[in-house]
Amino acid sequence: MTGMNQAKRILWADDEIELLRPHVLFLQQRGYKVDAIANGDDALALLRENPYDLVLLDEHMPGRSGLEVLESLCRTDPHVRVVMVTKSEEDQTMREAIGRRVQDYLVKPTSPRQVLSVVTRILEGASIRQQQVAQDFADRFGTLAMMREEASSAEEFAAVYTELVDWHIRLEQGGETGLLDSVTQLLIDLRRDFGEWIIDVYPRWMREDVPRPDLSVDIVEKYVLPWLGEDPIFLVVLDCMRLDQWRVISPLLSPFFEVEESWHYSILPTATPYARNAIFSGRFPDQIARDRPQWWNQSDDEGSLNAFEDELLLDQLKRLTGRSVPVHYQKIFSDREANQVRARVNSALRIRNSVIAMVFNFVDLMTHGRSESPVLMEVAKDEAALRSLTKSWFERSAAYQVLMEAAARGHRVIFTTDHGSLLCQRPTTVFARKDATSNLRYKFGQDLRAETSSHAFGTGNHMDLRFPKGRIGTGYVVALEDFFFVYPTKLREYQQRYRNSFLHGGISPEEMIVPVARLTPR
Image (cartoon, rainbow, N blue to C red; front, side, top):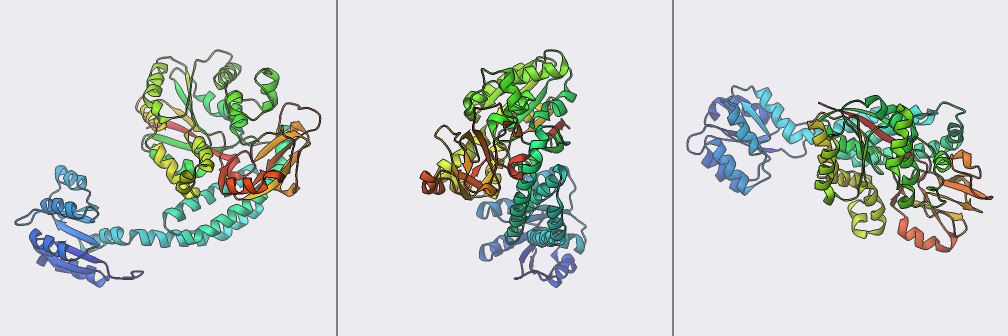
């Protein structure tokens, strides 16, 4: 068979095997080695003596039935791949076979071509899909490279980035890891171009000199406001969720919701104290500091700067609607709180016209904790591993439970994040006083400068970031590409500790171009 390095072995057990000789011959002509026998006892004897890649098993045979053979077979080899073949079209027979983990189910009479189709899918499907995804990417590579070179708008950069994310996932899932280097190189080139473009356009976005894409400050007005009504709606924020992490958890939601995906740009710095406050307030940092000066300080401490998200959301909704909209707000750090979280949500759902706002911090805690934990660093060693870990957490999380219950009750959900993260590899030196902020992807403080200006976006004008005006001499630097800031006196320590860490706060598509989805119950 084309593409087959070694003939796959098939055992076909059927009391009418003589009538099925054309089917057996058809498989053999396609390169499969087929052993054909007429009863279950002989099938089990052969299976004890030989390894088979697939078993075709007739349900009705003299002596042991197909289901009895299947039960015995699964005890001795839980990973055996089986296709049941039967004359019965009864639902119960089908359900019993599927419940015992058969790979497929054929109803007689069946043609040789139907059998070949099932066998090929099971035995060669992964290889065929791998070859196809490789061919598809090769066909698309030139166009992607051109799109990357020509990108000059928020929509064009987002289009290239989202497609590269999809290719990274498809190639990794298809086993074509050899082509991932090509995707990675395109992403590296895209980050460089993206950083140069953001340096030019972001200050103009802040001054409203040019049209801008949806930013963090626009999420509630554009996505939540149109859905306000008598029934409660959910605003769910999964802190620090990259687009690729969203892409692997969204299939878990699609059986229960119609998923309408879009994206927005996180404001700078792409960090929780700024981007998430912008979502809940609809305001930039300078506006928050002006309206609530008692809340603002010159640190980047999340605990102090993100302590008022419920009040910010209440104020924004009143400003947008002209009335007081009930808000139930929860910030969840651990799934150990799941029962209490669900109980509080159930109570809040009794309030009409309300918004149930929930922030889940696990992904952010995992991303930060990875830099401090050798075990977590090994488990989430790259983007693919981080995606897998995120998916494993999500399908067992309080967030997923809440969303499933929302779908069951017919409640709509806005699902988003405040910013993403980036796997950072390259240190770059920054000179700063001791009072400079501590984040590794952005800093602000007096007498602040990056040693290599091409590694960072630097400005002394607070309006370039819509920050409150600082003391005289205050500067701002935001890291580009995959650089992270180190001090000259701690160069080696920071290199060893933070190289190959997922960080955020800087300028990259991974941190800035983030998902927002409307979830409508099916």
